[in-house]
Image 1 (spheres, helix red, strand yellow):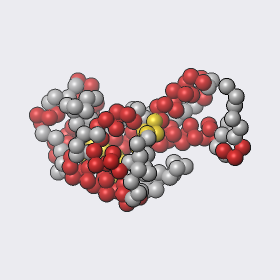
Image 2 (cartoon, helix red, strand yellow):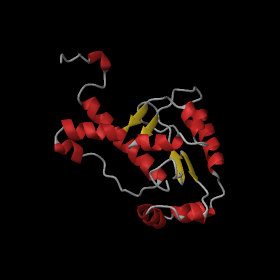
Image 3 (tube, one colour):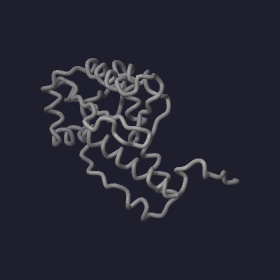
Image 4 (cartoon, helix red, strand yellow):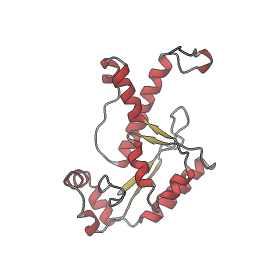
Amino acid sequence: MTGLNPAKDTIMSISCIITTADLHPLDPEGFDAVIFHTPEQLSKMSEWCVKTHGESGLTQECLTSSIGAETAANRLLAYIKHYVPEPGRALLAGNSIHADRAFLAVPPWNVILEHLHYRLFDVSAMKEMVRRWASESVLMAAPRKELRHTARADVLESIQEAQYYKYLIERMGLGILGEFQAVPL
């Protein structure tokens, strides 16, 4: 994104990997698109974005891309519908996913949100639960992020991190609801 404000900033690149409920990718290649931006649009980026997206090469990729936001949104929606044709079934998932959702609420991306379930799968929330309620060693054993800040790397890291938290839940014996007993509060 060119910044963190969906009212004025825009999506520069977007990536999607659809997984099963058990977090196994249905298509490891996934969907990726870099969105065309004019030099004027990119000149409004914050210092952090200029540095980060300049170093990753994303800024240059946006200048030379032939894919507009509307085309990318329609292609992504078609990709999602290929794997999850039923509206309201697929969850938007990732780290701090509320920020991504805010950008997807802005046209032309809103067509994607209209197809997704209203609930979010926020991996960052899972991390916060572990940070607050587990030993530090559990948090320290979580997969390390490379912090490349590219759409695809962020998606892959979110899946890997969610798989780790799923593993923790299964180890605690909560993975089989048939054995789950309510805890009196």
